[in-house]
Amino acid sequence: MTSLPVAAREHVRQEMVADPRVVAAIVSAVHEQVPVYAALDDSRLPEVRAIAAWGLERLLDLWVTDGALEPSDLRRLRGIAAARAADGRPVQAVLRAYRVAATVLTDEIAARAPRLAAADAFALSRMLLTALDTLSEEMTTAYAATDEDLAADRDRALRLLLDDLIAGRHASVGALSDRSTRLGVQLPDPYCLLVAEPVGAERPEMALDAATGLLEALAVPGVPGVPGDEVASSATVRGSRAVLLLPGAAAARAGAVLGARSWRGCAITGESLDRVAVAHRLAADALDTAPAHAHRPGRVLTDADAHVLALLGGHPAAAPDQVARLVLGPLTDPGQRHLMEALTAYIDAGSASAAARVLHLHAQSLRYRLRRIHALTSRDPRDPWQRLTLDIARTIRP
Image 1: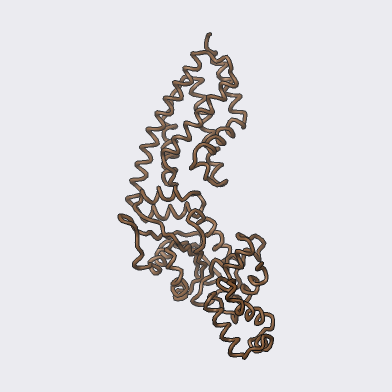
Image 2: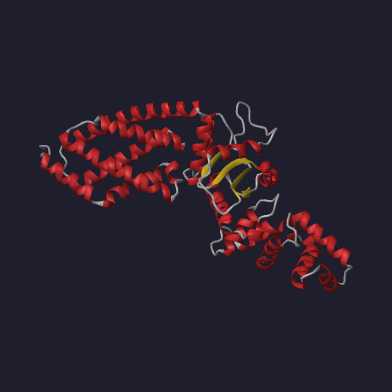
């Protein structure tokens, strides 16, 4: 059987490039067969599609012309590899994704040229093997160089890692573990994600050194790491706000540190490391929507405040019963029923004296129960904002 003329190969190339289902098939196969890519969120898939579309067109060009990858192609591959290394995507997974894509490409060509001659099949195989070998070498080299650069400037590397966490570019704890291992650090777990800003009407772009200074002020001494590693805190900026990833123990000091600087903030401590993007969105939205009286000196907004505000805004990140548990804490235990009754009577009656009369208690007994509620929930029923969160929680509680 004679080989396809160049015009016939070109026809196959044009047909495949014009058919969006080919790129969709490549992306779908990579998403299904490579676990790291299966874990990517929707915000990362357009980039995968763009790379797949470029790779498809270039490889088909090489098949049609019996050509080889050019210096501009190699530069682009090195750039892609450097970006994936900074993302923390393992090089083995990236190379596997290209192999999966090559298999889909071969199947798609075979479907369009069922009588493919041996010479054309040989040309296709030779082109794919050569291209895969070249991109493997280029990407492995670029990965090693990027890793070396990141290790040389660890503060920058940690900041880039936090930026990627906030953007949702890491969707698995495994990918985070691989990246932190290369940096020789351990991410704090449990962690506190603190989003903070200076108080004032005008909020210019936050300077990185201001965020770094806040990070130093919130350093938690004596946090144990694992042998050979250390627990790493990091800071970055988003517009007028500092974003800090800290050990969970830092949350207890955040209010005092921010109060001394006339800053306000929201500290999220209840999300897992693969949900830092969710934690950041909760905290940022809370700072956007919280009324002025929700911010008190020496206190930062918490997960419970953030979820209540999300609920009030009509876009809850948690189910109502979970919001109720976050706010009420131990008050949901059957053994604390008397405290729930005191809280309900106080909110409904409007004063401790009136609530005491409703419950047939001495006023001092009622006030004692309110102090216990404050101690157990870190929410003072006498504070307007905190009383509102308690009222919402006891109302939506199943």
